Picture 1 (cartoon, rainbow, N blue to C red):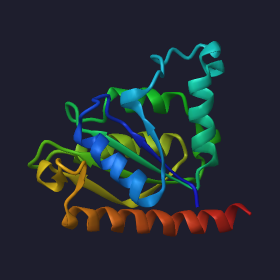
Picture 2 (picture 1 turned 90 degrees about the vertical axis):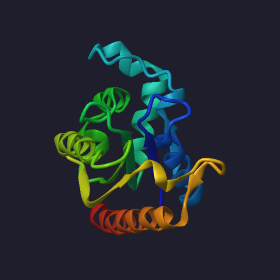
Picture 3 (picture 1 turned 45 degrees about the vertical axis):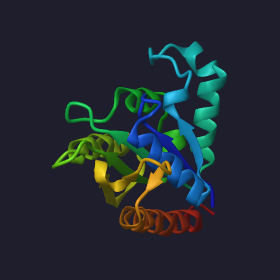
Picture 4 (picture 1 turned 30 degrees about the horizontal axis):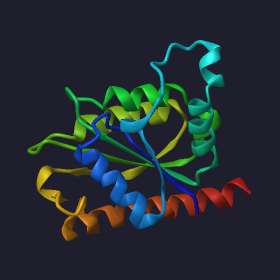
Length: 175
């Protein structure tokens, strides 16, 4: 099963990147890291789709059995970096594809608005955004080991198990 995770944070040292790297390593997901990306600002111009980085992004998502989208919450929404990357994609890559959502918050009640905005965009792409979603707060991270504490790792495991369930069903249907 091919899983792809998009680290939707533009920050090189952010918690969203820690969560994305953890999932990539633990679950063998291909990591698309927007903090290291050369994706240009979306303009809708046709020549942008000829760029190698955009062709690679589109191919990775199209070939995935399941996708995990991660984002920090910026001003009550997803990061601009994630939205920009998603603007280069369409239902050609996402139609009926299972997608899991994970937001990283600064604490308190943050993260839910980012999840809602990503879910809305996912529906517009005709993705099958799964019901289970997750918000990780600052206390969830093991900064020294660039990973997650056990309690948070269990929550991520639940999210990934549900994504795999939907991906297995999707693989059966698309045959």
